[in-house]
Amino acid sequence: MSRRRGLHRIRRKSSRISGRVRHSAEAWSSGTTRMAHWCFRGGDTALKIKRAVHFAYMDFSSLVKRRAALEREFEVNRANAPEIYVGVEPVTREADGSLKLGGDGEAIEWALRMRRFPQSALLSRRLADGLDVAGLKDLADEVSRSHRDAPIARGAMAVASLEAVIAEITGELRGTADPQGGVGAFRDAALGLLSAVQPVIEKRAAAGKVRRCHGDLHLDNIVIIDGRPRLFDALEFDEALATVDTLYDLGFLLMDLDAHGYRGQANAVLNRYLWKSQDTLDLEGLAAMPLFLALRGGVRAMVAGQRAAAADGPARERSRCDAEHYLALALHYLKPRGQGLVAVGGLSGTGKSTLAAGLAPLLGPSPGGVHLRSDLERKALHGVDELTRLPDEAYSADASRRVYDVMADKARLVLGARHAVVVDAVFSSPAEREAFERLADACGVPFVGIWLEADGATLLERVEARKGDASDATGSVVRRQSARGVGAIAWTVIDAGGTVAEVQSMAMAIVRRAIPECSILR
Image (cartoon, rainbow, N blue to C red; front, side):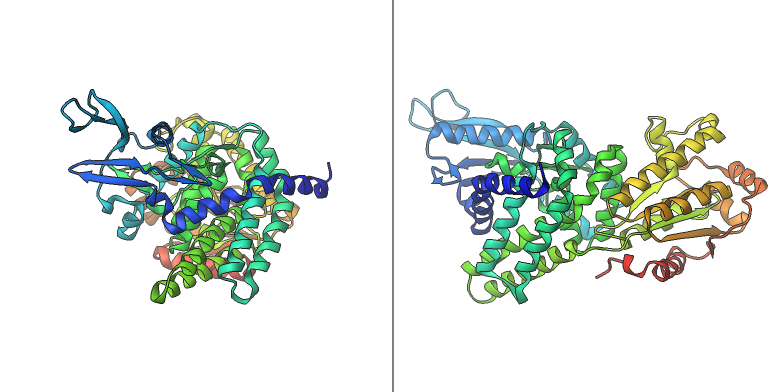
């Protein structure tokens, strides 16, 4: 089937589901989802009871339907947040006429029992207080786990669903907020990108990447309990809207982080997620990430526009500004961004991984470049976690050659998805360095090679001070590297003896000269 005919078929299909996007956004905007239930709080317990309401997209009009809705809400949330979701219990009328929760009398209502948590535990609050690297890794790991365990939706019309979202965003925003014709630009760019990435999306759907996900994965629906992130309040009243590509589900979290000024954290979450996945389909799927981020931003713009239309005074102006902000963000995601391959080399202790992690958020499409770290790829190849020390044979010439081959293969896929790549490794031989230069040339993207140098005492001090890091390097490893030599260095050399900020500033200046259009800073 031709792409034109395929999209025509998708448009017919999308008309059947388009109303769901609007109705669900309206429910969120007007507070219908909250008006559809009561919450009772006391001590460490919260009870949710559905109201007897009936909307076109939400029917709780009978006791049987309310019980089923609560049981479904419990089911879709229990796996991700067992500490919060306790169970569904009847509200009974006892023989003496009194009401009791979980009694022996006739059930006159049903309640979802949950455990309460302080609002300060929400991810939105924890980020403001500072969430460390370990916390971001745990967050990405939890999202990855939820996607791995989520039920696969075979036969789902992934592309049709996305086209329906574009149509609803466009239609709603034209009626509530259309600054300087931005809605038309959004529609044209989104449909153009959807057409371009349709084969990737369909390939992912056929491989089981469309699943029954959380569906509403923003910062206020993630909570830190006992030091671990938990996903809660999943979208339960519309299965179609929660049945999405796993990268689209992740995209809501990445967009929300970016929109609130946490681009570096968004990049860290994305890179950890990709490393945990070890799935080439997720690297190829990055081609659709700008679209996924734009649609998440567009839905937020649509909701804000609906709020503006229903409000008065200052509230109306705040919501209108929010709508314009999110629409501008969505348009930003849809604009093509420069690609590039940046390689950071140097002996152990020069700070390669720190520099690469700092550069990655600044490169290519949002939320930044893919950071490929040899230490992590080596651990993945041997099937161990990042902190497990590998034996000496894992660092043989043949084993190291395999690590570099894997990084090259991944970099090729990422560049093919029109994203930027930052590779960090020792790159001790000219052949290793030249291989990545040739890779960039073959992919038709700019290449930047940065070599970090520092005196031996500094390297030894840094390596010996490492704790909780994927690198297995020791002082003896550094001494062997120094004795072996690295040959002639054709890359740009930076003195790594300064502060992290100084080294990153010098490196970013080099990158901007080579690929100025690669920076995504707004």
